Image (cartoon, rainbow, N blue to C red; front, side, top):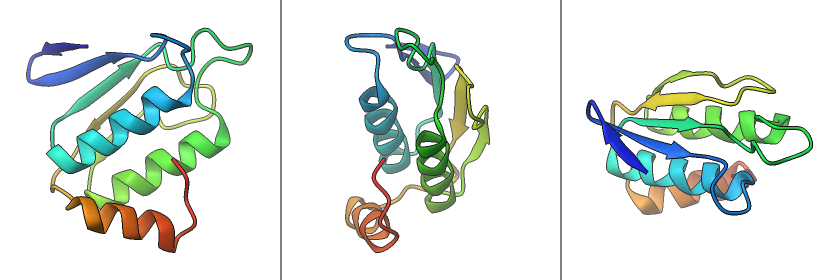
Length: 103
C-alpha cells in the first residue's frame, strides 16, 4: 500500500492475489471516504482482472458512497474510485445483505 497524491494505492497481486484484497479495499474506501486505486487486480490468477461478480460488487459499493469509478469492467486489472460520501459501517453491511451481494 502506498499513498500517492492523496489516493491509497493497493497492489492487488499481493499475497494470494485474489478477490479478498478487492473486497477489503472497497469496504475501507467506502467507510473512510478515501480515494482508492487498486492495481494488478488478481494478477496471479489464471484469468487475471475483474470477473463479473467483482464488477457487480464494485458498482454496488460505488452506488452506496456515490463514488466515481474507472475500470469497473470484466478483465480490468486497474480500478480507481473516489467516494463522495462516507458510508456508515452498519448501512454498508445492511445494504449488502439486503441485496444479497457478497463482495
